[in-house]
Length: 173
Image (cartoon, rainbow, N blue to C red; front, top):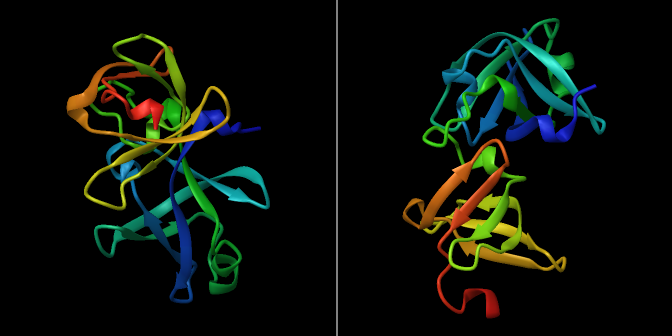
């Protein structure tokens, strides 16, 4: 059984395309195109299930038309509409230079100055020019922390930690 910590979210499935089982993948990370992956993991009724890729083609910078094995009709594709799509962490070469924002969800955030744990990264908001880490702090509250490459001083993929220079006073807000 696939566990949540073994994958990270890269998008969701939209509506079917055509009558032969193709479906739109709305993605925020195109790792499936750059890594050698035979399958993607879909969340179907709360269960993570591998679906093997037959073929795909890009429709835009954010949408790919995906064809999975054994999904050969519009009806079968329609049943997958709305499913979250995940990528297996073990397939990706997790060197710090190649990590995508999506891959670091679940990492622990450390303050560079105090070396203390700030919290766990539970999401990345890149909907605006200023990317933000959505962090659940050690007391269960939510923080938004600037996620600028220049502020990151260390990434440890083994320990799953990111050390960040946090601007003075930000944690007191």
